[in-house]
Image (tube, rainbow, N blue to C red; front, side, top):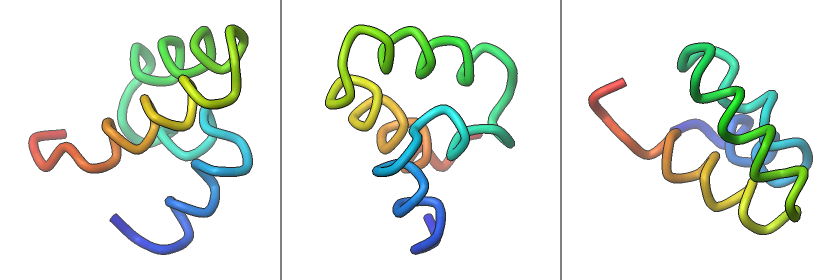
Length: 52
């Protein structure tokens, strides 16, 4: 997880997971619509997952 991805996850979560697949972007976008904090948490969890 690079510094720039973490910074992007804090500023605009859906853009930070753009390389992780369409489903990840959609989930993070929906969570960001419900609130900034759930979107950031989801983006950081997806970015921290080594399997993807």
